[in-house]
Length: 71
Image 1 (cartoon, one colour):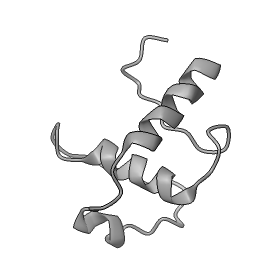
Image 2 (tube, rainbow, N blue to C red):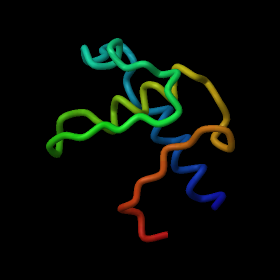
Image 3 (spheres, helix red, strand yellow):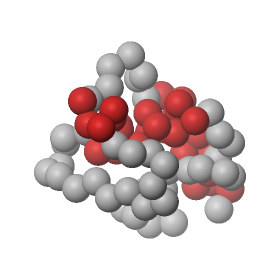
């Protein structure tokens, strides 16, 4: 689990925060569950990583976990 949290911190630290898609400001981030769907390569992961970066929480409080990871 430690490796997954480390990987999440790395992803969050590398995501650019200078540009955000229009959808970023339209999402009600106070909802308990938010679903984002769309075609590959449209920025869904970047959107989530930018939100995590803005929250500035430790990885044990909020982390990005890819279901593609075999671990």
